[in-house]
Amino acid sequence: MNHSEKYGLFRDKIENALARYFEAEGIPRALRNAMAYSAGSGGKRLRPILLLAANELMQGDEAEALPFACAVEMIHNYSLVHDDLPAMDNDDFRRGQPACHRKFGEWLAILAGDGLLSYAFEIMLSETAKAGKERSGALVKAALAIARGAGVSGMVGGQCADMENENALDLEKLYYIHERKTGALIRASLEAGLLLCSPDDERLKAIRRYGECIGLAFQITDDLLDISEDAGKPTRSDEKNVKLTFPKVYGVEGAVDIARAKVEEAIAALGIFGDRNGFLVQLANAILTRKS
Ligand code: GRG
Image: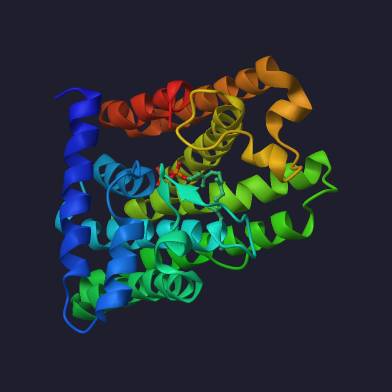
């Protein structure tokens, strides 16, 4: 199976499982529609795929990892719904479709984000509660890694710094924001996949390094896509917000060089996993050429 077939297989499993979660009883129809719309197809599913791939590195149990993968994708989608709101980035479109608040109105978009975030934790905790004594420790650690990546010292903290520093950024702040706003959940997804397999410290350190490096490379390529005419979203949204970006600081060539160096560093970190690491090596390389 080649890289894109394997990526597609992971994506299908995640999308099928997500659809089942949205079919659950007890979710008010309007909320279900807005949540399913936002987390529906169109996304790359990068974070849950990273989680499943990290889990596979150590021959983990995919059925056990899948709910955590869905949880991370729900958290990612909540962050996009809230980020698009008028009070934040004020974007009308997401993935070429009306943003959640444009389609359903603001209050329902806020609740859809809240719903996605709390559902993610409900899913992870109910899996942990169901697990036997032997497994529950590993599941708690995975959930904690995701909570930290998503939370006040991770993605939410990074978003706060970004909102506060809209017009007055220095380079240190640029790294601070991107390591948290974009990088933290990417890194946490990988960590969680590994933590389900009770890794040793060296392997955990290696996957964190990989996550930090691809997180930064991913953000840089996001900045580059933002200024490229090819991007499938209204271009120059960062310019609209007068934000400091990697291409603005380093120029396009300089930003590409940094992304390339980060991808190389990420791949080097995977050496410890031996020849099971092929998928994550290719995924890191694919970040450099991504078109969306
Ligand atoms: C509102 C708490 C809160 C956080 C928002 C992620 C985020 C934080 C804001 C999004 C702003 C942004 C465009 C960041 C650049 C990198 C990024 C996260 C892009 C979107 O992720 P993809 O490309 O999205 O993985 P898809 O559509 O593939 O799911």
